[in-house]
Length: 375
Image (cartoon, rainbow, N blue to C red; front, side, top):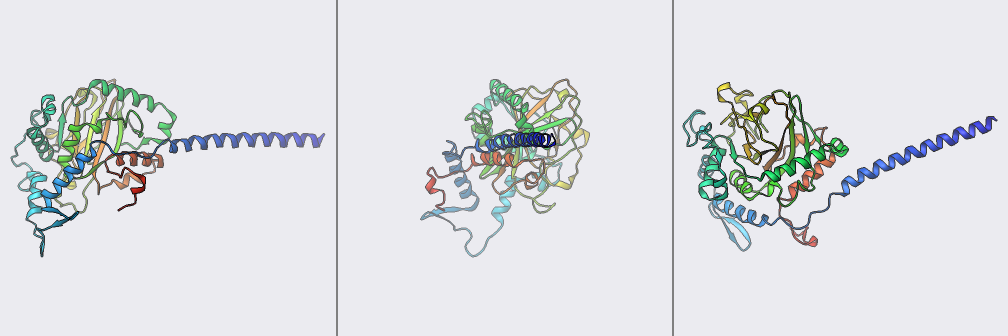
């Protein structure tokens, strides 16, 4: 009898162990499937060649570069390098406040919506005048509104897709993103339809043109998330996307920009993003914005808000009974990466791989695989 009981107990233990192994195998297969879903990149986005042409034009203007025999030779350097061109570039790409005082007169009124926004007609006829207006608002004020840039139907499709994705277990396990502020949650959008489709917001030609003018060189989509502010959420603290690159007193051209796309009409009660206009010169100007300086811009579905990564901003409290979801896209020059975000323990390895796929959309690659290593 004792032998029979022992044999039966051992069989039960073995059966339980087999079930545990099967469960573990199923979990492993599911995790592996998440990685194998990411297919290798094929081809280049149609607009990448236009970007490359613009980059070459910008390089030639900035450095007096001339192509000779396939190489670029800088004839202006000769036996030494003068700083006049660099100083002229800084005058052109940084706020006038660097040249005088922070309250100095500028060509744009940062509290006048007519000065800091492009209307649908200005966006439709995206000529030199509209581009200059956009560049001036971003340079001097640090932000810009693009009124009704995207169709409402597209925004609704994005919101529906986000809501469906957010309810999945994989979203919670792999794509939750650390978010500042009580009552907020954030998810990175995976590199899959509709978030990476041919009509995704980052493919918009007007948007890309404005970003290219502002950053002045090759850039990438570093991160795309949705930040959702729940009813009853509190104020975020005033913050910048990044502090300074090398020194608190530095004066450098812009290197990163944030593009916010509300996925709903945003009223003042819902807490539209607040800015401290022109407070983007140096990190040590402080974490707070005087009450009289604060600017919050309500928006309708389809409008887009761009702001300099260095601009002092925050998400205020949501006093409405509605959620306030907003797509946040961070575009940055190729040399800049917010490295601290990558080593945050709240970010999974899978997120990083999806991020890379978004980056790759903005970099030209040889069409043939055998040419990948021809450098």
